[in-house]
Image (cartoon, rainbow, N blue to C red; front, top):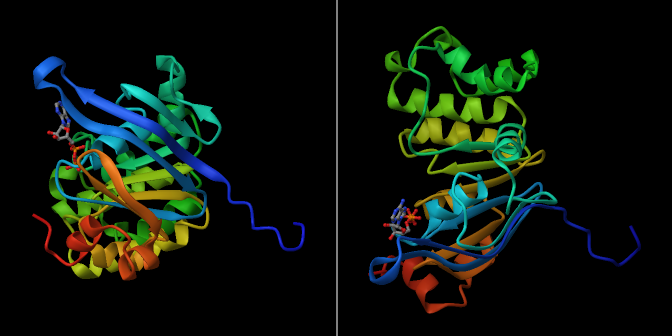
Length: 254
Ligand code: ADP
């Protein structure tokens, strides 16, 4: 690194002018209206904003589960636009971990089998030491032989997190990953994901400003399908530039 130059930050994922419409004509819903955002490697980005502002839609587009109506999504250097089904499936499987609000656990498999399923499908060995670490940090060690129906909501949510990181993804996408968890479990997960941040790029949708402030370096505030404000988390919370951000963080949002 040349002296005086800014450290170069690798961009692990990005959205460029992403728009998403559902439906057409008069009844079309503009879920995203030209959203551009970079997600640096080794950083934690919090996506905040009121219900219906497009947060989940963006996550689905980043995960390749939904196709933007316009614009570009990149994971690393890979442009998702026009990727065939096979390439998209492989990219999702090999490079992205996601934790969504619907758990999508396989009911007939044990917790252990659910965790290793993505690696099994990919034909990759699970790093046993890594798996043990993840499982114990998530408090699941005593539950590995249980089926999802025998687990509490919070345990199922932690299982989803374990499954998402067992395969070592480049980008970890989490839509409200702590919604079913009590404060102690939440604190443990925050601690774990803060450590994971060094290795991954993490994007989290959260309604909790306290959580965003605790764990993220970058925060984007969404409203009506657009980014109202994006910046370093400490800056955005202490010195927001936009009135709508200020209204939201002070609880005056309509
Ligand atoms: P958020 O995650 O911020 O609550 P969403 O991304 O879920 O917002 O939704 C953004 C907008 O898009 C909302 O108006 C929602 O009703 C609409 N929407 C989301 N998914 C669909 C869908 N599959 N079909 C039609 N409209 C949708």
